[in-house]
Amino acid sequence: MTTPLENAERACRGKAVLVTGAAGFIGSHVCELALEGGARRVLGLDNFVSGLPRNLDPFRNDPRFDFTEGDVRDFNTIAPLVREADLVIHEAASKLVASRDNPRVDLETNILGTFNVLEAAREKAVPVVHVSTGSVLGNAPEGSMREDHPKRPSTLYGISKSAGEEYALFYAREFGVPARVIRYFHVFGPRQDYSGDAGVVSIFLARAMRGQTLFIHGSGEQIRCFTFVRDTVAATFLLAAREDTLGEVYNVASRNRVSVKELAGIVLERYGAAGASIEHDAPRPGENLRPIPLTEKIESLGWKAMVSFDEGLEATAEWVRATL
Ligand SMILES: NC(=O)c1ccc[n+]([C@@H]2O[C@H](COP(=O)([O-])OP(=O)(O)OC[C@H]3O[C@@H](n4cnc5c(N)ncnc54)[C@H](O)[C@@H]3O)[C@@H](O)[C@H]2O)c1
Image (cartoon, rainbow, N blue to C red; front, side):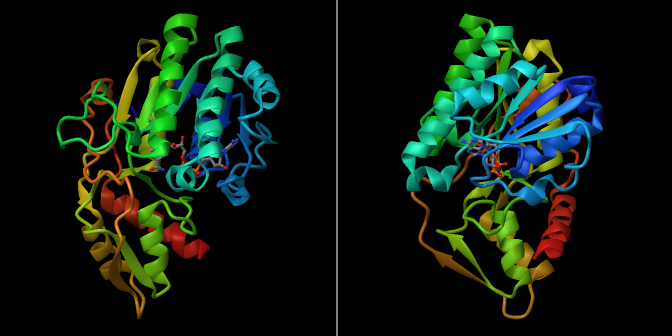
């Protein structure tokens, strides 16, 4: 077992690391841990479509951090940044709810944007960690979702992210780009935006603390394997540090199993202000009810979630309280 910092040191020490989606929830933690791990430079790129400038505050004054406001859909923006990098962590994406509202942006960001990163990386064989999602798999019975489980995405987001994975694997196989794919599942923690439609932990916490209603979409029986953001980022750097991960796909999730209904109950009990309550509304179209992956593949490399659900929830609650 290696710690998040050890993984970051192995992957980043002395290197220039490009992080796309740097102002996002997870991307900002990637930047922060890369700097902690001794990166020579961290190049951040974001167009702020869902990322927030305040997410950069903890490290924006670090002289090793260099931010570009720009778009992964624009090859002329991304190519010079990739050329400067020794490692690319490709986090930028259009997300689930946005994919329904604007399928074209979803396609362009998640497919063309990924293509641009890979095409730029091809020139100098720059190593890439391509970030994907459990949503590529679609609904499947618990216990069956290994990395090679057949993909049947039930959302446009899942479709575009699935195509992004295939591009990354093709570029690794056919063009020798040192790329691998990591699939995240239900990441939570500080800086996860609670003003939008995604990130149920932060949304429930913010609404409970404000004395508002926590809306559960559908029955609330849907299961989530909530994984704390620092553990997720640690897994990302673990893959970046190991050559034997090239051309491979890894699921990353904790062994937590919490239903959305349970989560609402816990949050209401621990953090609910006067007036806070729970209600059910319509189920979300295409929602996966049991997106539970098998994670032995990354665990066999020495990764394990180190932050318990309760510790992570408390850390997230502290951040939500401080930013409300
Ligand atoms: N949060 C989760 O639970 C979860 C689960 C599975 C996979 N993921 C994946 O993790 C990655 C990060 O997600 P997140 O939760 O931090 O979301 P996020 O929205 O906070 O971060 C994504 C970032 O990408 C930026 N971005 C979007 N389109 C862009 C473009 N065209 N050019 C430049 N920047 C652009 C956004 O502004 C944002 O800062 C994504 O690839 C997502 O698919 C997240």
